[in-house]
Picture 1 (spheres, rainbow, N blue to C red):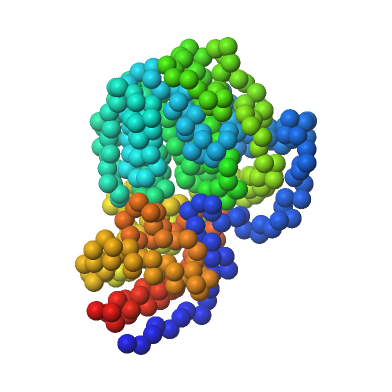
Picture 2 (picture 1 turned 90 degrees about the horizontal axis):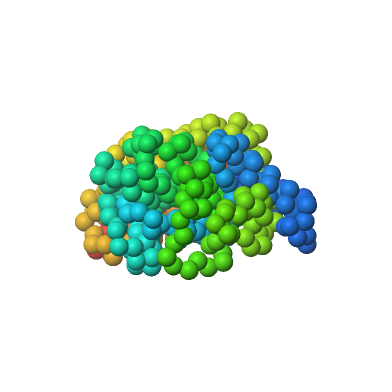
Length: 391
């Protein structure tokens, strides 16, 4: 069988990972030259950088003025854990999950916090649970965009404005690429390394006035590690939300986040970021629509992510393989692209069905995605030839 011909054009930037994601177009290490290295983050210059990061975040994401924004340790995971351990337990909890990270929060609440009054609403990869079953008189924990499934909630209309419980939303692969309905959200978390391509280890925690009230009026039954404590003497530690972080942040990472925020503002802010992600996702969608071997993992077009686009194999020969065979096929395809230097880190998440996951967030150039498409066909044909040769 003939070896397929390699395409001539290569993506200028082959970084299509779903986190850490591609840096913004034109980025170089020179962007970090003004970082306040060797200085305390509590010094005036360090604190001013952190305050600037908070205010630019508010500006670009259109966060209401009465919501608190804090920079916290341990990426999005740290921010979510702080919220779960500090806020839950006052009332029953509804947990909504349809992919790996949402399922992780279910595990934390059920097996670590061991709350008694918990309801779980779960769906398999590619689908959303029935959101109508959620009781918003209870606290609700959910992801806005399923990073490992490519499935997102279409909007915040399913959340009532007069809810009695708190809504805790992991928005890490949605922030800066999708419209978050903050009036319907009491806790929003995300990390820097997704849509803006920032460096890791830092999380963002956004609290509504209702969430602050809960923190100041409810004390969990379990002890809280120092790194999770958001109150002191029954009052919110306001400094956390003014750049006085709980532990020492990397000022190099802060400078990188500031650079990404300033780039976002320079191109037109949130609307421009969303438009770039939408355009990128549309390139892949058109390709999938014409493909004989690839399909969307997300079943409903209205719930498909415009950032973490997850794809499955529809070719009959590949689909007929068992799970291990499909995983091996996917690994071979991904490895071939990696070896050619045209696409890095585009395999599906380890817990997800075998396939591809291609990041389409705003820092990815549409031209690079367009250049990638012929290489996807090439890699598939090469793997298919190997599959038949081994049969």
